[in-house]
Length: 49
Image (cartoon, rainbow, N blue to C red; front, side, top):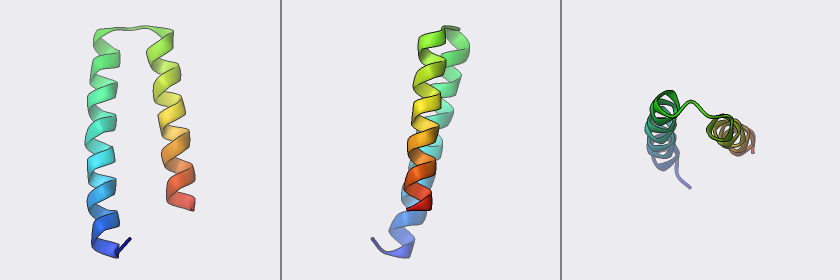
């Protein structure tokens, strides 16, 4: 992937994360929090790679 594509991808992921966190605030459940944690770990590994 090109540098610009990577930047846009990061912005897309950030928007998705914000949406998921907002939904998690509405539905305060441990399952959602575990899902967010898994997503963050996945994104971290992708950014490091």
